[in-house]
Image (cartoon, rainbow, N blue to C red; front, side):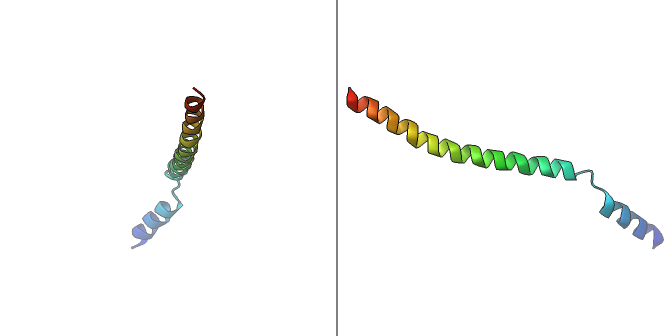
Length: 56
C-alpha cells in the first residue's frame, strides 16, 4: 500500500506533459485567429475586386 501512495505522489507531482499541453493550446488559439482573419480578409478582398470590376 505504501508503494501505491508513493507512485500516486510521483504521478501527481509530475509535470512533464504540461509544456506540451500549453504549446498545443497556443497553437489552437493561433489557428482559430487565423481562420477568423481569413474570413474577414476574404470579404474585404472580394469587395475590392468587385469595385475594380465595376470601374471597368
